[in-house]
Image 1 (cartoon, one colour):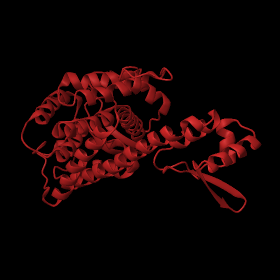
Image 2 (cartoon, rainbow, N blue to C red):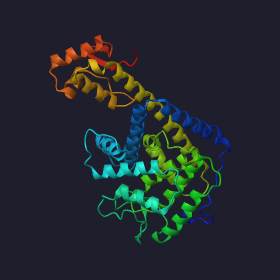
Image 3 (cartoon, rainbow, N blue to C red):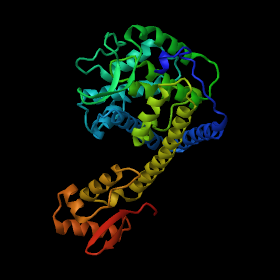
Image 4 (cartoon, helix red, strand yellow):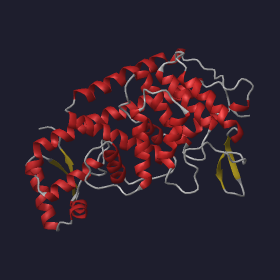
Length: 361
C-alpha cells in the first residue's frame, strides 16, 4: 500500500525532537553562507551564484540520468541572468532548464500556484517532443516508476490516478501556502516527498520536486539559497531513491526527514568549500594572470574547472600537451616556469612528475 492509498492521506506524521540540533545548524549555516556572499566583491559574488545554479542544473539532471555540457549550462544561465557570455548557448533543453532554475530563484517569495508550477514545467520540458509541457498528466494508464526489463519489470512506486491529480495538487498547493509553522528545513523535506508522491506531470517531477524543496527553504529563510540541494542528493543518489521509495509507502516520515536534513547539511558543506574555492580562484588570477601565457592560462583554467575536489592526479606533461597542443619541449619549459614562479608545486614519483596549484602568495 502506498501513502496516498492510506486512510489518513495526506496527514503525514513525524517527530523532530531529536533533530533540533540539525535544524538549528542548517539555519545558522544558511545565514553564514549568505553573509559570505554578501561580503564578496560584486563580480565574485555573481560568479559564485552562477556556479551554484550551474551545479544545481547539472546535478538535478544527473539524478534523473540526463547529462548536459557544462559550458552550455553556464552560457544558458549567464544569458538568462542578462550577463555577458563567451559563447551563445545552442542546446534548447539546457536553456529551458536554466530558465526554470532562475524562475525558481527569482520567484521564491511568491506564493506557490498551479500557474507557477506549470510555467516551470513548460520552461523545463517545452522543447521535448511527445511531452505535454505545462499540463498535469491525463493518461488513464497508471503512472509507475519501474526498473528492470519489460518482461520482468519491478514496480517501485505507483502514483495516484491521473483523474485525482487536479484535486490532489490543489490540496498540496493550499498546504504549501499555509502559514502554519514548520521549520524551513522540515517543510522542504515534507514538501518534496508530498509532491513526488502525487507525481503530477508526465515527466520532470524529480527536478520540479527538488525546486519545490528549494522554494520552501528560501521562503522560510527569506532569501534565495546559497547552496545546491541536488549536488548532495546526486552524490547519494541510490540512498535518495531508497529513502524516497520507503517514505512513499507510509505516512510516518520521521526517517525521511532525518535523511533529508543530512543532505541539506552536506549540501551546505559543499557550498562552503565551493565559495572558498571561488575566492581562491579570484585572488589567484588577480596575482598571476598578467604573467601567464595563453597555454599556461588554458591548462590552469582546466584545473580550476575540476572544482574543489581537484584535477585528478594533478597536471603532468602529457596532460599539458593534450590540453594545450604544445610540443613536449614547450610543455616542459612551461611547467618548469610555473614551478619557478611558485604557481605550481612539483611532486616526483619514480620517473613521473605531477604538478599541483599553489594558492597562497
